[in-house]
Amino acid sequence: MPAKRIAVILAAHGEAETSGFLENYRVSLHTLQRASELIAVPAPLQHFISFSSSLRKKAASRGGSPQNLLTRRQASALQKLLDQRFPASCPGISFEVMAAFSASEPSVEALVGKTRLYDGRIVMPMAPVDNALICGLLCAYLAETASPSELARTRVIGRLWSDEALHHAYLDYLFGHGSLPPVSQKERNALMLLFHGTLVEDRNGQPPSFHTGQTETASFARRLMELIEADPRNPWGTVTTAYLNHDVGGRWSTPPFGDACRALDGKGLRHVSLFAAGYFSDGNETTGREQQCSAFDPDAQVETIPCLNDSPRFISFLAGRVVAATRQILAFS
Image (tube, rainbow, N blue to C red):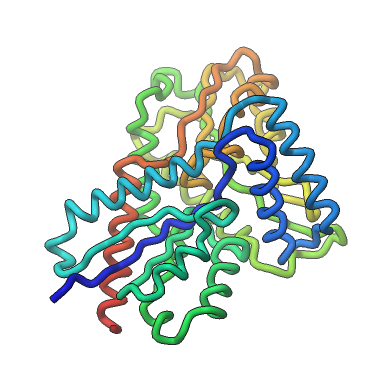
């Protein structure tokens, strides 16, 4: 009997991989077009933002974003782990792990269509918190395009932010990082956890009419802070949070990154560690922020701890969720 094929689609946002104007313009415009399905962003403004931001990136010559490459590495590492570790627990199963993107190629929609005849299909949005822009649009697309039998063979993995196994993967990764500040100076060390900001009020002062993930993000942040502060391995005397916001749609989460950095000034800190806990892979939003934070406290040494990316502990967590979803699919097929 041939092995049952299970497609595993890691669905990331997707960013431009070079500083080229056209690539950045296309990615930015596609992102804004998707956002405009939920947030009122007029078409001329979409093009203006895409044009101006692409010019800035071209002029800055910073290079492209690492996010797409990191997502492909995550897919490769997950494929390798599933092939090595899980044949015994999932006999007769052949996993095919693929990286897909919302704003660049290959698109999530294209790979969802390509895998419609597989025996099972697992889609994992590569962000810890669900919202209408991530799972909402994806689930709506599946509901519109997939037959009942396809939907029965499909699982979209969500609510990762509430999974204690993920929390402990974060802790093991953080405390296993090689360049932590000295515990002997704990009171002079700070950790800033960075999360993707959410729209809090629209331009009219009203709550957004769609699911932003604000409540879930706040709960996720509180839980991580509690666990980090209580862990005996913790070298940071101060653990705080900050939000990486956008400039469209209205009022966003507080404190924004700049305000959070300003609040650390005057505390006599020697080490400030930045860690983008609200992201599964590094990209344009998470990299290159040390200088901005150092501007508020030049005496502090600011460093960035990379995102979970393709770290073994995180890939092991993903594999566990994939196997659990596979068993659900097979149980109902």
